[in-house]
Image (cartoon, rainbow, N blue to C red; front, top):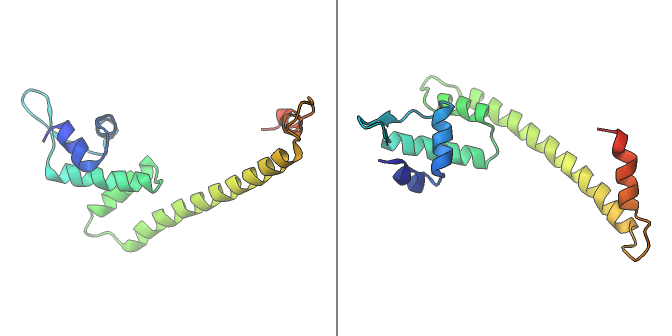
Length: 132
């Protein structure tokens, strides 16, 4: 299969497939003319990667999950550990976004949004200038 066929079947753009090859997540064969030649297993790996990325797993986690997927001697505890770590990162991000939303909602509510120049949103942003 060529990259266009694999892109269509896996649901990933050709550019992403090339990137995954570049970083060693997949290794399609090369035909005598230098073109990539994908096997059914490559399509399956790419679909796996697409789903993992859609769940927010990073490249390193995807690499580990792919290795575990191909390892008949794996333990589900190894997979669960990766997923639990990722879940903790998601929960932390949700907490951060919730706090960010509450702050912004408070500022939006405090701003009159009228013809006057006073704006609590800008005042807060200016106050936070030295932080971060």
